[in-house]
Amino acid sequence: MQKKQKQECTLVWFRNDLRLQDNELLEEAIKTQKYLVAFYAFDPIFFKKQHSFVRTEKFRINFLIETLRELRDALSVYNIPLFVATKPTEEMVAQLQHQFSIVNIVYQEDATFDEATIEKRVLKTLPKEVHTIKVTNQYLYTPQQIDELFTKGIPKSFSSFRKKVEKKLEVLPITTYRIPIQEKLYDSVFETPNFSEYTQPKNTAFPFKGGEREALKRVQSYFFDTTKVATYKYTRNELLGVDYSTKFSPWLANGSLSARTIYWELKKFEKQVKANVSTYWVYFELLWRDFFKHTARFQGTKIFMPSGIQEKRITTHQNNEIIECWTHGKTASDFVNANMIELRETGWMSNRGRQNVASYFVHDLQQDWRVGAAYFESLLLDYDPHSNYGNWMYIAGVGNDTRNKKFDVNWQANTYDAKSVFTNQWNKVNE
Image (tube, rainbow, N blue to C red):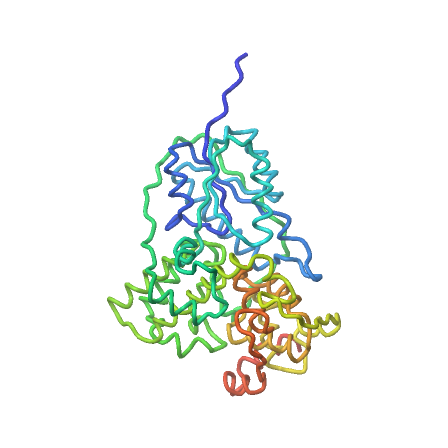
């Protein structure tokens, strides 16, 4: 009996680029003119414990599952199967290699430690004749643009970075392509991690679901339906409600929305409706995000070290009792507690809250900033390593600014929650 020949394919490795629009991953895969097979791995490396916290907890798991379900359904329109499993990525690739004749693998390159480690394992699993195609899908300005502009490396100062980028660089257009409808030969396989069930509180500031459709709906709503973007600079430090900030970050973090999509929709808004300091401030925040990503690319594992990118010798402490009081919202500050309870209950915390609880953890409680960063990694819906560790280094004084970032949490509470509405709402949960 003649052995059935395996289907030649291009393997599309989804990571944090879980979308159909503006996705170089798909553009490059389509160019190969091979049968497309997609996969995503819930790699165990992201579910291990770090400083006693599970690295990916229920909020982000649930959001990822919602995102992947939508991606699976969107790809099925083109008969592209999506294989999702809870196993090491290299084991998934080895398994797919038994089923298919892999000619090409297309994936997004990422310089952070775990992502780079997984990439090496995957490439080691594949035969050398498999053609590897790397894309850089998560930036506003591409690594090539940045490296050509900063030939001696990324500056540690955001101001220096911003001024030069704004003056010299243009954001590239959205990537467009036509996804071919291929013959339906395989069904998707969808295996997901177990996680503890929860009911999202009605008063959460992030009542949205995962997926590209939800992300694009939010952009449309925040920019054009409500025009809330026109007042962003004046509301961004608020603590309650859905529309005080863009809320784009969870979709940006897993790549169901691209930074370029936001940028060009913002430009459309400025052209059709209004351009002001608030619309600029949305771009400003996208640029901060890009700065952290390029800094991580340039600085490597330093972003995870106690001394940070400044390589500054600091004394760190870890008192488990103090850490537990902070994570459970039982410190001496009601304002800090309210923010920590909101995070524990919803997976979300405002930017203002994040800065305050991080400062309190590092400067008032005098604990190791990496423990705080690990806790945020565990619970935040919008966790990504570049921004999370970039911001924590910044607060600890070992990141992109060495100045003391100690916040007066009482002053902050009186300024941003003068009537204690936010503080009282969330502290009630602990009563």
